[in-house]
Amino acid sequence: MSKVLIVTDAWHPQTNGVVRCLETLGTQLIAMGHEVRYLTPQGFWTVPLPTYPEIALSLVGVATIAAIIEQEAPDHIHIATEGPLGLVARYASLDAGLRFTTSYHTRYPEYVAARIPVPAEWTYGFLRWFHSAAEATLVPTRSMLDELAERDFTNLREWTRGVDPDQFSPGPKTWFAGLPGPHLLYVGRVAVEKNIEAFLALRTAGSKIVVGDGPARAELEARYPGAVFMGRRTGEELSEIYRSADVFVFPSKTDTFGNVMIEALSSGLPVAAYPVTGPIDVLTDPACGALDDNLQLAVERALTLSREAARAHASRFTWARCAELFVDTLVPAQRLARRAA
Image (cartoon, rainbow, N blue to C red; front, side, top):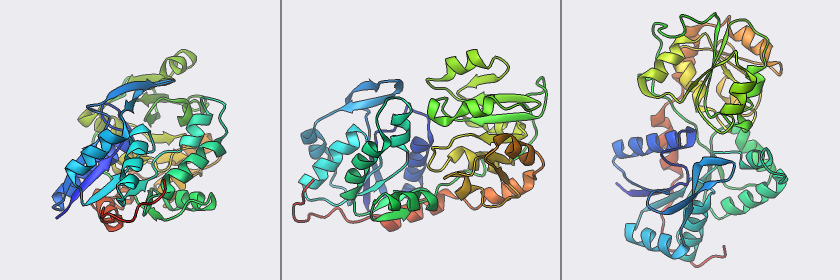
């Protein structure tokens, strides 16, 4: 049908919601008959991101990326991230008079401010400029879209996420038999912006289990020796861990969506979270999740909820719908009159 070029700074070996979304999106697009190409940091010189070495920053010039885009000759260009590679692709596309779309996956202003003394408004200013050149900017939730609109972002489109109901499904509890219950689970990056300490500091009965890795893991392990840190888990092992827990705790206040919440719900696992962007968009049925500014109260309520209701609610989120919405926003990468960057 058409060739789609997806430009992303977030790619393997990173493990996060952005990589998972873009990879699964490509699979869906191919199934729909599209040809998909990825332009990622792989194949270029990279340097590790300060304070977060798992993330590689590409070192590549505009001319190189321009030549790749010209060679690929895509029908559509989507710039998925605002990192160095996305920035260079933006310049190259504008210089060639090519149209493109973008997507807003991550609250970089809050992430940056959590690490270095840079006002969030400065970073929002850069992001507003970055996305202003796009024909459309895809945003994962309605509340995030409204928030960005209030900050004068334009051409915003809602773009939901999906879950694989076969991979993440209810089943027998095969983990944590040796740990006191209830079993409270967190899955995701172990980093300061994820607010994991709010989960670990809860005075609840049972066991707190953290699945994932990241720059804050060593410090949190030392400060909370009673918690179980399992490191990164994938595939069937991760699926078994989800279905073996009693409640999924999502303490983040900075996520734009929270893919792990729908993975938990699809596994029959009720969710406890703060009433912020992401959780308020996903946990719209009080039968499947509990929202409260007091996270401990949210956990206590979530422990009373139905695993069947959680699974049923997750069925609303499909990767097929995600791909359909993506295709609906694509624009032809046709040559236009040169426009200012």
